[in-house]
Length: 427
Ligand SMILES: [Zn+2]
Image 1: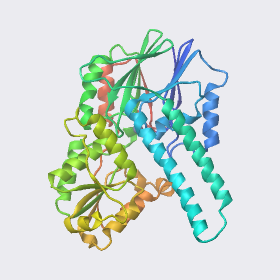
Image 2: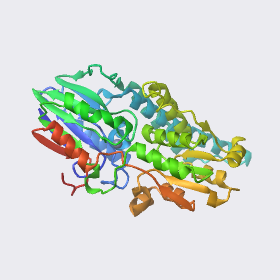
Image 3: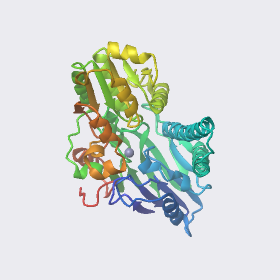
């Protein structure tokens, strides 16, 4: 049995790990380099990277298996040869489909708007622009078709025996994980009499993190090789529990009539922390992102019952020219927004005394602190700079050093490989 880490040993994201036997081969994740991390690659270069992995080296049984739906783990999926099956958790597939459907819709809208404007002003259509957008839509369709073909597994119900699947002579068992995106997994991989434990991205300090230690104690036994992430090894951020995130949010929300929070649409636990905080201070929760509306529907349908309501979301959706805006200005609000929603947040805050608005920044601080990140995507910093009362309340989606050490202690593997970490980070 062979393990080859193609990317991720010296960078956060862009993960590709290969596990193979004489007849079978599985890639765990096929990730895109994160913006600002590792070499930036074009679409053509990404295709080349994946082609290279498969050139002259095909096995009888092949698959790609994804730990979760973050782009730095799944982003190269559409470059994978069409005869190679790809696997992901059922919830992860739903998140990806929702995302790529919305991207396609955005492209279609821009095409329609451009053509309507040209007609209105009697101008000829911008042919080159139209060709480019049509090419994007074609690529969107390709991505959606591939995503629809993804094979899935369902999360094992609590206390039920875990279910495995086989790619040739490689057996894979997924275990539900706690991370900053819904439906993340660790894997037990068995091949040639060896046992590998791949953690994916994980943490213990979230609501679902309480399953980490019991799962490892029960299933991560006799492990030869542990492959763990090490995102936080060079970071000193304090990893408070999600419950504490919620408590801190509740206490600051109480002092302001108007609260706007920047958070990720796919982070089920953070959205639950915000929802619980708003409930505690008896404030109506609003959202303004179509994607967040969609992900919250997915979370609620899939998880409301099992989580006894923690992951049940029923916010009010509001957008431009909505009658609800006046009510919000009168009664106060807690609005969760994504990084694309600055224009709406500003519209909502117009005619409100700025001193009465609190902005809670609940994302990774590198997005506004790191000049390279700001250059690549200025929206986080622009959002933060648009408000005068700002507070950061966040905790990482990744395991801190203490947790990584605890995991190694519990599993006690013969060998540890640390991926998803900076080049100079050491265990
Ligand atoms: Zn991740």
